Amino acid sequence: MRTILLLVLVMTINFQKSHANNENRVDRKSSLMVQRSRYVVEMSEDSIARKMSLDKLKALATQNNSEAYNALGILYLYGKGLPKDTLKAFDMFKKSAELGLKDGMCNIGKLYREGKGGVERNYTEAFKYYKMAADAGHHLATYSLARSYYRGEGVEKNFDIAYPLYKKAASFNIPVAKFRVGTCTFSGKGVVQDKEKGIAIVKEVYNEGLTKAERFFKYNKIPYDKKQ
Image (cartoon, rainbow, N blue to C red; front, side, top):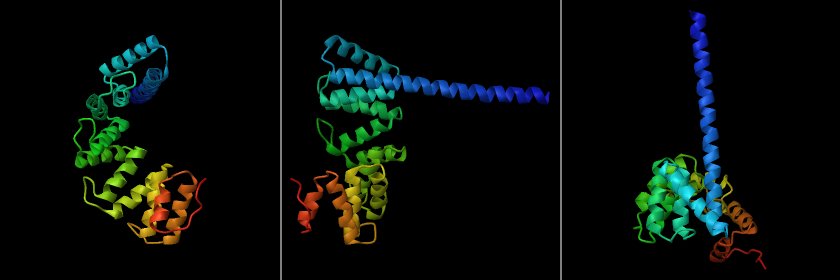
């Protein structure tokens, strides 16, 4: 009897693993399908191929595919393959976010923060969605959440929270986040002030091509090598 129970337990575990692996394969397949379809809609000169890919995205969306909703939102937002419509983009992003897609959460946050195309600006809602996406591990949302705390958008301004979030976002190779780590270090916002270290960090991102760093040098009267 004990042997039979052990055998059943092993079979159950193996089935669960197999089921999980199968789900992962399906997710990867549908994800690639969404990516390919969106690429065709945006880039192909073949109108028939564009229509077929757009129909595929719409069909996937009706099956509650979060990535398909997000892709349709991007197409609506930029008017590629679909009429430019920020409100429809918002609706697509929101459905995507409700299904748990981090990109959808971040995109909703961006639209709320910018308040364009008929979407009313709402920093509180922007903060909420940025936090949801950042908590789920979205890299860009981590930067956006740091900015919310840094500027006091939708939440009380708090440099002590903003700085470590900027530092975390910088570890994801987001240049503007690294820039903020430098400026915070220079001014002592959320971290012990160290002007030399701060300048060195800003010079790094400037040399890597972040042009906004130039304004920092000019404002603080810091010598720097101008790019040709």
